[in-house]
Length: 70
Image 1: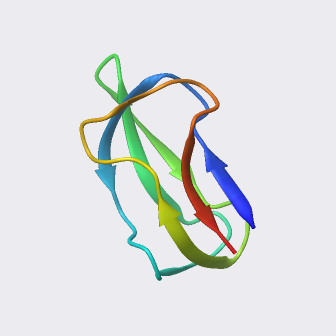
Image 2: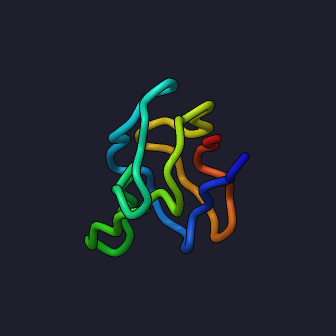
Image 3: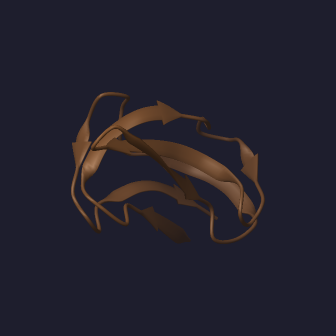
């Protein structure tokens, strides 16, 4: 199981995947917004999303788990 974590503090602007979606390494899954900049968060490996831990509009800190895949 792989944890997909935030690499900075910011707001969840857009969630691009749902539970059960197949993703490829490097594919954007969540877009964070910080200081009017959009920062894409990508899957680090191929897999299937097993859980999304955030909702659009949530504030996250550096290192928070955004989603999980296997």
